[in-house]
Amino acid sequence: MKNSKLIEALNNCVTHCNHCADACLDEGDIKMMVDCIRTDRACAEICSATANLLASNYKDVRGMVEQCRDICKKCADVCAKHDHKHCQQCADACRKCEEACEEYLK
Image 1 (tube, rainbow, N blue to C red):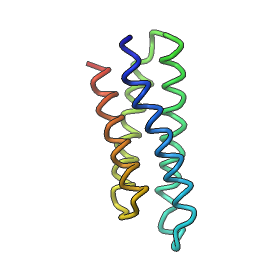
Image 2 (tube, rainbow, N blue to C red):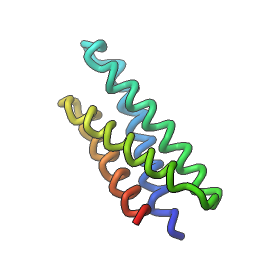
Image 3 (cartoon, rainbow, N blue to C red):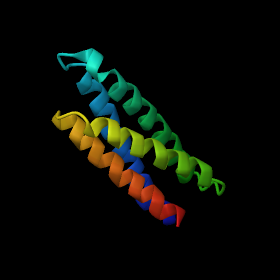
Image 4 (tube, one colour):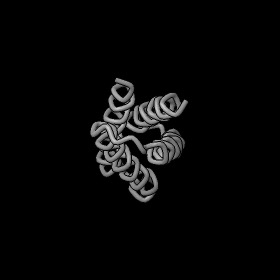
């Protein structure tokens, strides 16, 4: 199934984004983490919605996958600015998801 690889990457991204957002809340300078938390939450939401849409075999998903790719890139960039392990892991998952979206769109 063409969708399975992307769905797996999307679900992995959701997991990492949710974990990162939660872990950011435990950091000492939470004000420094606000953009990361908000971007993590937005990325998790769109990745989850995209995975659900793909799982339904709905055909007109190109725009959704493009939007997902774009927010994954943004989330990876935001998380990569922080040295925390959870942020670095999230950035990696987001980049992999961005790549999976790009591959799907080919």
